[in-house]
Amino acid sequence: MTTPAFASGAAQSSFDPYACDEPGFSWWDGAAQPHEQEQEQGDHLLPPPNPTERLDITIDPRDRRRLDLHAALTAAGIPPLPEDREAIDRLSALPADINIAVRRWIEHAA
Image (cartoon, rainbow, N blue to C red; front, side, top):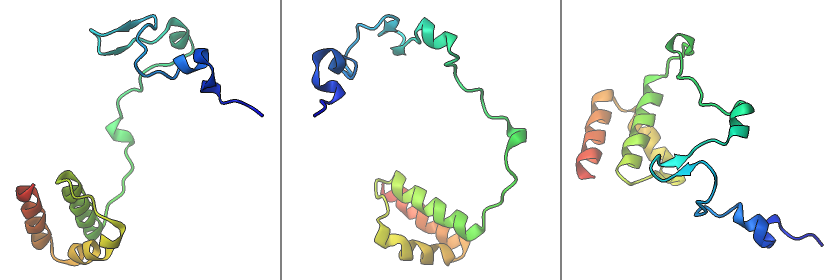
């Protein structure tokens, strides 16, 4: 029978999110600094996206209204449930000005 990796005290210390005795950690920086070994292995930040490399994809207006409605509900603290899909689909089928009004109501109610 095998024991989990975190069963021993030594292994568990590596999983402790509150352990601050790592070399390179500074509370003043707000985050741990990468170790020298990680820097040598190429653990670097990703470069910012290049706008010229974006895909040229257009979203159907109805799909855009559906996404905007999902975002407005989620931002207001009302994440849509799976059973709300039909209602959101029907609201998204309405003209854009009605969808904008519904989103405005949601945002003002939040």
